Image (cartoon, rainbow, N blue to C red; front, top):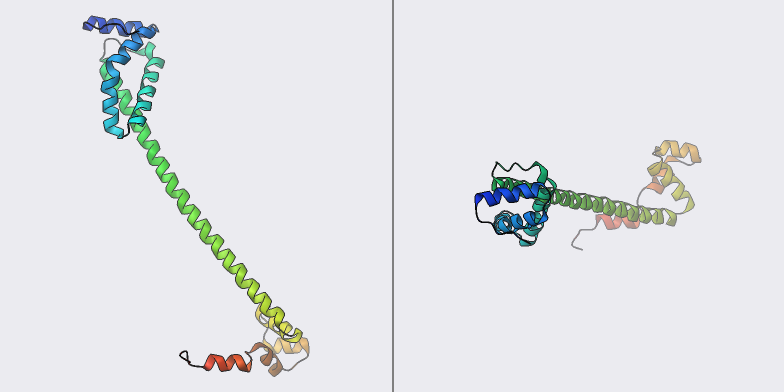
Length: 187
């Protein structure tokens, strides 16, 4: 229940009663200042629901700090300072949330890109393994020694007991492939 406010002495009395934990004094001060504060907070945050929450937080802070209120100083200035700090805290939190959201999106895109590259690599590797498996056993062995282990044609010929020219035959494209590679692109 709100108490009627008539003079500055009444205001000081309300503050004194608030300091002692009087909830009626608190309600009267809330009724006196809440509309003005809400309007000010809405102007700063541009969102009525957020402003209402900040106003509630503000008056919760007043209740929590009631014992340290100086009745000789401007209570209105005290309230507006708390309101300003609540709005700044809110805006910092919003800015941080936006920054974290941007970082999360960037990390997700980067992760997706790495995943896509990994899948592409796995698909290419599977195709290569399938092509290697389609080779004759001798061609497969020469290919693996040359392309995977990095041996020279001479080293392969010595290891397998075949001529260097045979190694070259196994590692070069088939005549059909070389014919296709020499054909003009428009044909």
